[in-house]
Image 1 (cartoon, rainbow over the protein chains, first blue to last red):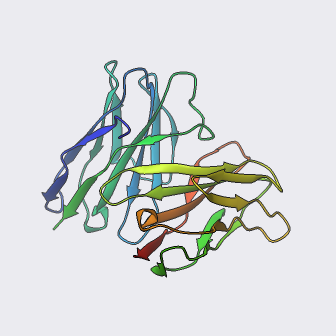
Image 2: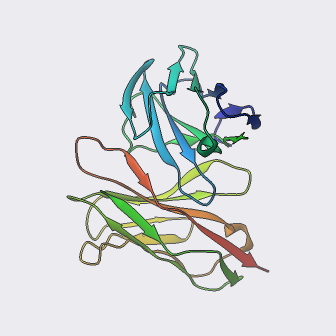
Image 3: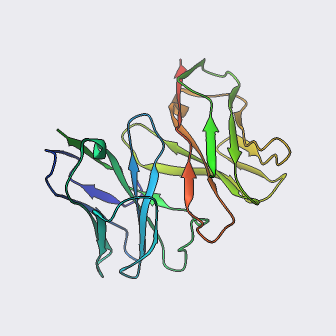
Length: 116
Length: 113
């Protein structure tokens, strides 16, 4: 049990719709990263937030956006959903003072998004 | 670009067997290397890591040695248990300005009692 929770567990959307996924980190974890894990693939880094600002991004288009809140929760928003967006979305957090990828990340169980 | 290649699964072994999961990498410079594990229904967990050549990471009976000459970071365990059944991911972070983590595709391990 890492203390990182995600909601919802599963979600079904149709192409063109918008979706918001949520993550709640442990108290004191002020860095959060989001990943996309397609079926049979490893996680791919989407972006990272530190102190409520984006401070790193992978190769994902602008329709993937995020927010981080002072209460250690965060959101991943995806606009104009495409079929290829179907995947498991993971969030991971790090404690204060540990905002490098070299430090251990604590992952949530993920949200399974299906786009029809 | 940087990448990680793992042996394809699933890997099925009997309890107490010796385990090796192969991992090789391509990267500029000298990356740091990681193994993560994903147990059924749980999030990924860091299993072990190594930050420079010839370093050996170890945890829970698992070991992996950073081999620069063969660009490899193979995961080994001398005697596996049923509870080791999970998906294992090899990953790297390059020593460049964008130190993002890159994962392999994962190897599913089944241990039979």
